Length: 116
Length: 114
Image 1 (tube, each protein chain N blue to C red):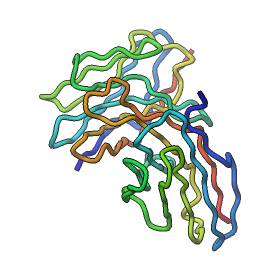
Image 2: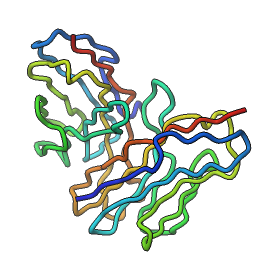
Image 3: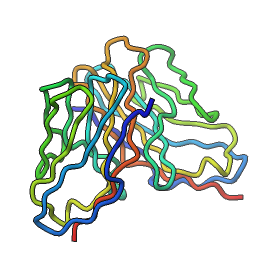
């Protein structure tokens, strides 16, 4: 049971380049989320999904796109990278709320992105 | 909307001393509350969670937290700090009414002095 797998672990981009951060989970979780972590700001929600085909914006969605074609995968696309997107990105998944004792997000190990 | 405030961006304790990390939340509906720990250059690990059952929640590594609705608080404690507890700790809130989004506080870095 691998949990939540993020690739790549490190990436350097030039301003204006695009790329996709991959996230896959093997726990059959319905809920998946993307966060960015910046010093002193905690984790801020970029996009989230409550199931295949359903996505919504979080707190800081500008410059990022997501799609959820399968339960397992939730890729995050940077359309045109900017230095302000230099950050550590975390993907997380969870079973749904509503009396589920196993509720709680499991996090991947993160992708450290630098935009120059 | 929901929000979390963690009082103190840095907390320093001596080894063997009480650890107290403060978390206050804001939510217009009954919340689910969490504490996560992050060791350097690692992902987040769930310490404990409150899901409307017992108000005193015990987690891993000897940590516990108490949900106090009247104070809108969910402070994290450990009776005796260990050097291995040095890490960053995040409090987070979620609710079904808010689409199950997990909202984090800014984090508290715990330093343990020998």
